[in-house]
Length: 113
Image 1 (cartoon, rainbow, N blue to C red):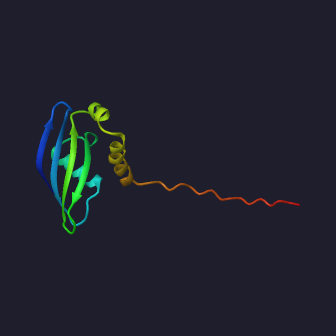
Image 2: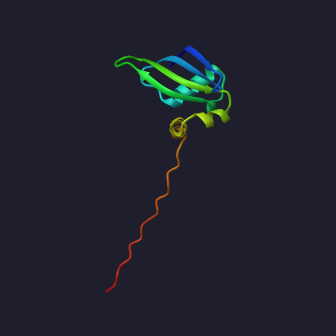
């Protein structure tokens, strides 16, 4: 996967930077993959980076990603919508290995008449 940053727009009143980048990949990248690659390229913390959208044109392997990089966690918590926080956190948790719940054996009780 190749990532190239095309635009950075500083928004000082909101204490964030809007980052636009182009991604080339064989298939649509997951949010977790893009977030990991972009945070490594920027040298920032993943918790301060929120992916707004990943766009593509039909039949192409080029994707446009729009992300928001906050100066600190406090401003991100105040400004970002709750659904956007869940969207960015849920994908990271999905990548973590899950433990299978233990199945309890059901006991059948006979009713005596």
